[in-house]
Image (tube, rainbow, N blue to C red):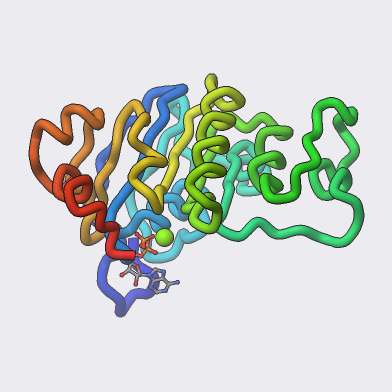
Length: 202
Ligand SMILES: Nc1ncnc2c1ncn2[C@@H]1O[C@H](COP(=O)(O)OP(=O)(O)O)[C@@H](O)[C@H]1O
Ligand SMILES: [Mg+2]
């Protein structure tokens, strides 16, 4: 994947299979391609992109974006709100009753995705602006609410993704390492180095 025909590859030779319900942590320095990986999943870029993504065996390029994209949940770094009540913000189409809706504004983006019960959920540095304690509560909430969902968490802090089933280390647009946290620590490669220095290059 490139952001322009005259630009270098933002993603190159990505070969990846995720299991349903898996909790995946994604780490890597700024510019490594973490957000780009998520963008191709959401089909936010299609020019200068080749290859295919299959969900449950179906090539996502065969789905209309209007049908496909609402099935995924994205929790970005900044969650937007529009005017009107919190309730309306969480449930614009008025599909849910009050008990199903949490009113905590700081967890707004997270709540919106929980309410919509998406099967695949992506958090792109969603907790970068909250303190460590809140981050921990959010991670607990995610494990509970998204236990059946496939969750991709791009992490700002290592603590955020240490309990993931598997961790992907991105580097220069490619997957440098993938495995359980224990496997990657034992491998003593890039992930182990990140843990030692706790340096995400941010
Ligand atoms: N909108 C864009 N236009 C041009 N280049 C971009 C754009 N977004 C990202 N890039 C480039 O693509 C590469 C991967 O970036 P990105 O996926 O945002 O990395 P990360 O999320 O790991 O910080 C970087 O070289 C970055 O400069
Ligand atoms: Mg990013």
